[in-house]
Image (cartoon, rainbow, N blue to C red):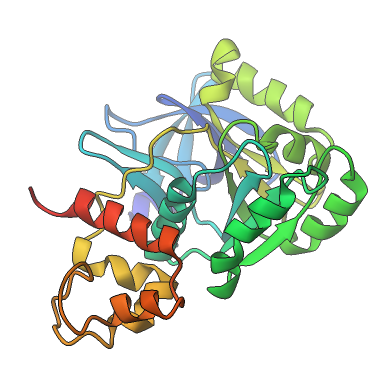
Length: 299
């Protein structure tokens, strides 16, 4: 490590395959490749690198504060590291998946990353139903910010600007929720940044599969990280017995169970079942808990 300290330091602002764009403290961007076959860099990493011809070689990844990732039976997919917060973007239309939302929140809770939810398309008639579905999350203490990115951009900027300022924020959300609209609204030169990054990565047609960091200010203190959409969000990194501890609405009721290894499904004197009966845990949230618990339990 002593040798690595003498190398230049940079920030990984984009990644595609084994190609990365590293930004220097002065704002210069260099296409870099990791040393050796293994590639363990993610956007948001601080790395030590050195010049190699017209490009650079990443020699060392500095220790991370955190890492948000998903894991299924076959592979692990990292989103980004060193995050200050996660912003999950959902919309009044199309109807969002509570299961996917909950999985992202559980992964963030496991990584100790604070979360906010942005509910887009607040101008549509479906907003009341979407708002109602998010009530359990508000009760857990998660801030929900309603915006209409296309029809009321100034209001959206005023709502989201202060909560993003001076932070590195990963935006997750399914297609159709308005992620591109959000980035273009808040990052005035997003198009230029995309062009620079795509050219550096030689990714052209692969731009939708690239994770990218966008600076929202000239001082480079506020960043939005956009990651490709996903259909599945595996949580194989989570121990099934720890699942209630990562779901704020189940955490406290789970402490009232008679049995220390209660699965909260059919055991007598279960605190979670009692809270469910009292209406303190919503039926959809309990169904999601069971779905994920069964997925994580040994077969």
